[in-house]
Length: 168
Image (cartoon, helix red, strand yellow):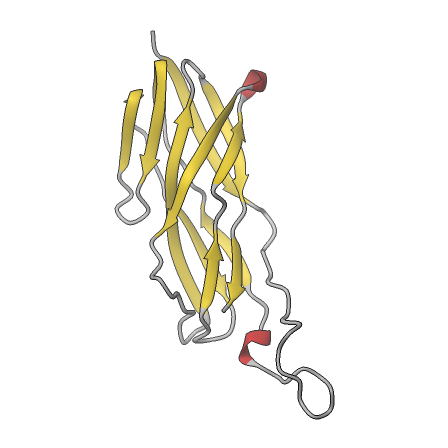
């Protein structure tokens, strides 16, 4: 017997803003020296991560979504029921040309009905090793990951994936 499984993930609703540097070089007047990185970072969710619709059988399994290609792969006792799977898309705005670091959690627990949970792990982005904001002060990236579902855990699962962005 197979059960319907749906998923919707949301990133935090409020923009994430990096804290100002407290260890930055001081100028002669005792105040912090002005730097381009004093421009606050703004993080906006353009598209929420959505693994689509799958059916989960008695053995459980996982759904993986590749951020580059958008391809969805299922493993274990999971059947792809179609629908649109969407990579998450995030836009960061800040100081033009600044190097940034994007931090995603190792895992996120999602909640479904009747106390059931599922876990998203292996969150990855399509960013280079040293991402920089463009000349317009903007950087857009995609992310995906793996959803692990226990046996016969049907339902709609929701959760928030915190995205932290800091100047380097």
